[in-house]
Amino acid sequence: MRPTPLLTVLLAALFASSSAFAADKAKKAAEEEDEIPMGEELDVDESDFKDAGDPDADPPPARIEEADKEPEEEGDELDFGDDGKNDDDLEFTEDDEQQSVRPRGPGEDTAKLYRDTQKKTKDMTPDEEQLVWEAYLERYPKSLFRERIEAHMEELSAIMFGERVPGSDKGGGAIDAVDRELNFAQPYSLSPLDTRSHISVGVQWGFPSWFGGKVDAEYAFMRQFSAHVLLGRDFAGGVVQPGAKYAIIKSARTGTILSAGLDFKLNTSPTFLAFRPTVGFGQRVRVLKGLDLAAQMSVDIETREYSDLRYNWGLTANLRANDTVSVFWEWSWDAKYLSHPDVDDSFRFFTTTFGLKFTAKQPTSEQGGGRLDAGLGAVLPYATNYWGFYLGGVDILADYYL
Image 1: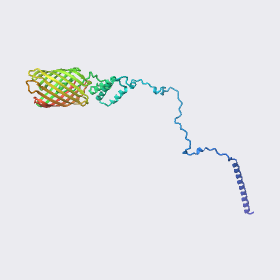
Image 2: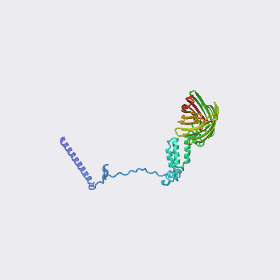
Image 3: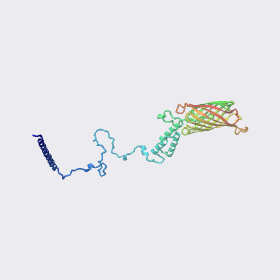
Image 4: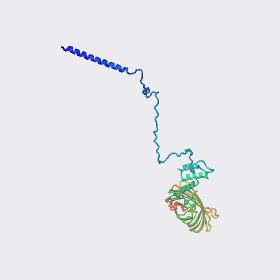
């Protein structure tokens, strides 16, 4: 048997089986397709396929900002919540709060007015603040805080006059104005106004032929009464001069002093006795650390024959720039035989003195005791008649307070 017919038979058999398998597969697929219902549509939500920027899109659900509250635990914990009272029902029982509303009567103030004035005076100097509180009490004489204001004004006075009690910054109070020392500035050629325990020493050197000086020791038995003894030399010769003085007015609060004294003056060369009544007035002005202004008048009533009254007037100014340095100026008018019938031309000797003072030692007590002031001044005679031996000079002076 030849191979060609056999190969043809095998191929035909294989083709027949393949056709049958394909027909069977097509029949099966057609049957499965008939099982799917073609009349029903799928239920699809078209909103799931809308774009994020679609204007018809529904807003997203609101986000819950608050976290879920934890269940409250019962226990002994402190409750810092409201006590059930409304803030509008609060009642202020403090006096300052009630007084801030309105004055209760004429001349009274309120806590708000008082606090506002305190703020106003916060950066003021003591003298400026003192004036403000004085005006405040004049406007509100029935101030609810009068005692507090007056106590503060006393402290301001102590600060201005440099007489604060040691330790006052730690709660101590200032000395009462009735007992406080004034410590008024001491002049050189004039009599001191203040009744104050002190020792004064001075030396005078003049051109062309003059040398003099003094030592004056004064003791205050009381705040307004003192006695002193002076040893020195003036243009009429050496003198021993004891005396007493009384301060009619001496106020540390207002800085005012009015005093009167009587001295017995023993002149040694030539020898004669004289009486010297003196009256003087001084006022402290609140400038820097204090400007002391004073005026005085005294008369020497001599007991020798053919003599006349000798008048002495004077003015002084002492400016304390700070706790250490002072500037002073002094005028002195010395005159005699102003109306004597036997003397045609009166005696005149007018001088002016100016210079500096230094506090060489600060006070060690609350009243200014222990302070030492030293100074140097230049003296210039500007109107003279007689006493040509003195044409000007230099004065050295020191005051020590006991």
